Length: 82
Image (cartoon, rainbow, N blue to C red; front, top):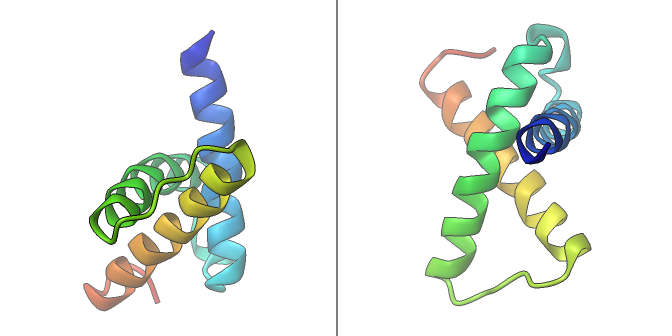
């Protein structure tokens, strides 16, 4: 059950990040899920590196979306996305 929830939330996070970064037309549902899950981990790691911690669900969600946006920015820099 937790895996299904992680996939759904990861998809939503990836989709929102792709909307903000204007890459939604280039990414499918699988890419959104992968970017959402990996971006969430990246966002959590970056937040801990700068001394922030997101304990509440809304703060965790915002950190996840920001991390996914950073990941999309990195993918754009590496020319995987336009």
